[in-house]
Each structure stands twice: as C-alpha cells, then as structure tokens.
Length: 152
View 1 (tube, helix red, strand yellow):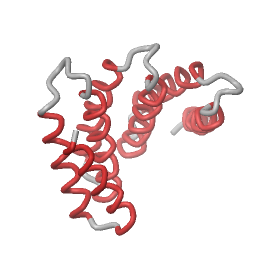
View 2 (view 1 turned 90 degrees about the vertical axis):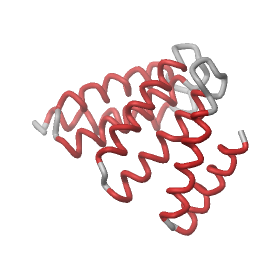
View 3 (view 1 turned 60 degrees about the vertical axis):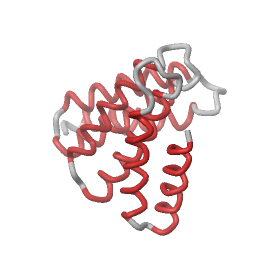
C-alpha cells in the first residue's frame, strides 16, 4: 500500500500548502493503487474511499461535476464493500450522504437530497445517543430536512 501512503502524504501537503499539483498527484497514485486492488482484494474499499475523497476535494476546488459524479460512483461501491456490521459502514453512509447533498446543491434535484437524508438517517441509527459520532450525524440531518420544508 505504498502508493496509498504516498498519496496520503501528498494529500496532507495539499491540505497544508493548497497546491493543486499535490492533489492531482495524490489522485494519480490513488488510481494506480486502486488498479492493484481488483474486486475481492482486502484493500479495495480503502482504495475506493481514498480516491472518492480526493475527487470530492478536487470538485470543491475546481467545480468539475465529473469529479463529484465519479466520487459518488466510488462511494456507492465502498458502501457495497462495507455492509451493515462493517466497522466503517456508518462513515461510508455519511460520506455518500455528504456527496449527494453536494450534488443536490449543484443540480437542485430533490431526489439527491431525499437520498442523502435517507443515508443520514441510517447513519444516525448506527450512532445512537452516547455514540461519539451521534452529534455530527444528527446536525446535518436537521439542516438537510429544512431544505425540503422550505421548498428548495
């Protein structure tokens, strides 16, 4: 997983310095790492998740819908590899919900918002009161539900 480690270091440097070249290189290394993790490989979900996250960040920087769309495809694949009971299932639900909300904000398609709320509710059910992730799961759900009530 040296490629993912190198990509992670570049991603951190991008976060510190904001140089797009670092993010681009990280994405290239993450794609290469994913190619080395065919279906059934134990590191495939991590590789997909890392690449999806980087594409989401690049979308935030450049606004290219293709990055967001590809990231959502990868996040859906991650969710399939992290079914209920997997330790990262709730995180994967939350990540996909965030991306769907972003797509709603860009395209205004209420179906994306509704799907995001479903995934966020599922996340909340996995993070009941007392769970360390509970407040962070509940707040977005309340905010997103307001979009529907105000007729967005």
